[in-house]
Image (cartoon, rainbow, N blue to C red; front, side, top):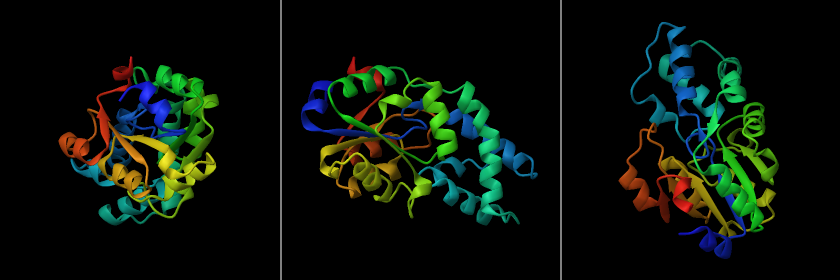
Length: 219
């Protein structure tokens, strides 16, 4: 599918951030490792895959349950925000081709939205740092809906904020469970490959309507 195909078929485009628009998966690997190490725990190999489609609060609740922590979700989320915020403000970059792709869609008249597991205090500064915050018409965090990104809630809310029906939207994500949520919302799903994600890329390609190795594919 080309940019021309997208601009002809859709009125809106919705994007995940971590691993999709942002080259940021390394941040959470480091945060997870540092957080668990401070409690005398090691980072399990399956942890990233287990939390991939969860909201920020769901990740905190899962972590408490999995490791038997006597801590409140709010305290854990605050610690994660503290550990990650500096990296997002200063060190995280866009994936190659992402900015140019967004600007082409915006210039063609598409409404652009974000649907991310990142909390708003982290989301907005990193988008501003990367110079793309003004391009978006709607920003939605998974913390604003009842269920995680494996469910349609966040995508339906983002479409509503764009004032568009779901069928007029295409959504991009690098996580298989999130692609399921996109499809459940009645949107067209595009799988984006992220080498650091613990994903079955072949299965993701089968699940999504189409897939890309990266946004450079459009140029």
